[in-house]
Image (cartoon, rainbow, N blue to C red; front, top):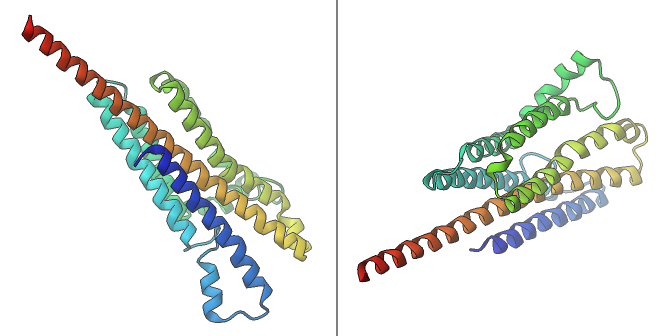
Length: 244
């Protein structure tokens, strides 16, 4: 399966999950007293909830991305190229996959709030503070290894990472900034706005990881083609030497 096919397939699943979430919210809230079956059926499509189809898909994507990163690292070592960055990136994706399911970041909210005295504003969901510190450290690492990455691969990975971070951290800060308004005035319009923000946040995360998976697959495919060209060149050289 080509990287392009994987990209289109993964994006299609992302869109299906988004549509499922929006439709399920409408069904759930349009019925005054939904049945037990309808309630739990719609929960399956809650793109921001646990456990749901979206969470299963997000964890799966992240694990696929982590495995591909390790594969890219092994392939780079075989070519005697720098490989540490691939293993580090794979470890980061593996950790995010665990956090996606276990919600480890949520345990940081109260301690960080108390530490900085946060009671309102965009940092109310205070786990974003240590997350931003972690992002800064990763950027320092990336700056040190950027030359080891092909330019096209770096750009693709950077775009995927930025899309993910806008969803995971940026939209979370928007959610924090609007939390009090939504709580004080729980109108139909504001409820819909809340669902849209959740949808945007989660879909950006899914699409970001999809782009990262595509970027690594494309790098692996390019490396394989390069290996094939080198093998053909070696074979031609060996034939030429034998003839001479």
